[in-house]
Amino acid sequence: MLAARDSAYAPIRQMTPAEPHLSLPWPGARPLPDTFFDRDAQLLARELLGKVIRHRVGALWLSARIIETEAYYLVDKGSHASLGYTEKRKALFADGGHIYMYYARGGDSLNFSAHGPGNAVLIKSAHPWVDAISGPDALSAMQRNNPGSLGQARAPERLCAGQTLLCKALGLKVPDWDARRFDPQQLFVEDVDERPHSIIQCPRLGIPEGRDEHLPYRFVDAAYARHCTRNPLRRGQVEGRDYRLLSVAGAER
Image 1 (cartoon, rainbow, N blue to C red):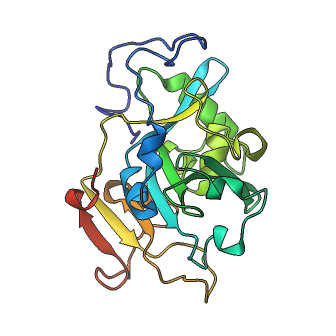
Image 2 (image 1 turned 60 degrees about the horizontal axis):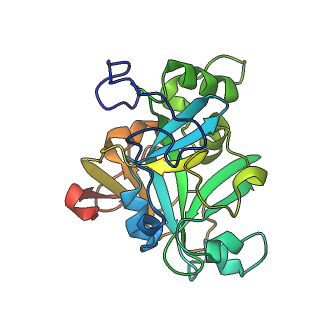
């Protein structure tokens, strides 16, 4: 299944991306304003689910719907910010809406600063988004960016199923985007009127023991649980012990 508003390749009103000199990349585009990110990290992590990351590469807009996020705080031992301010980490201490990228597991990772110094959200995984702006050609480009181990095209549901896989598929690199603001002509997050029906809340992944690994700051769109970094609903997981289900009302606007 491809993440699209109607179906994988359902006919959608055709729009042509605008030329770079225009204020919006195309008529009707809805980039999130910086004020959207100026909120508590957990709330931002929930509210980003269903939003679409758009990255322009040449004539194509590569796009992915956010399905998994993790919140981090300055006082959180699992966060980079807890290690203190450095030039490399300056985006974490900037106003909400700054991009913080770093290397992890041999690849690039994408984060957005939230309200308050040192607070941020990690974009843990996403799902390819196909619509009138980002069509089959864009999906094919993402598959070329992030082929399987034998060089084959990855299935769409595995293309962005992890923080480094996401960045590789979208062509996002630390040197290009770390410590920058969004650019509506190149990279932004868009509201496409998609919203999870329910959200899974559970502990974050890969946090070392003794570094606040128990904090339930990971949020997953329940409809895409099978396609995220690690399925929080896999066999053996128990609701109330390993995860909580939040209603849509739990993800406030």
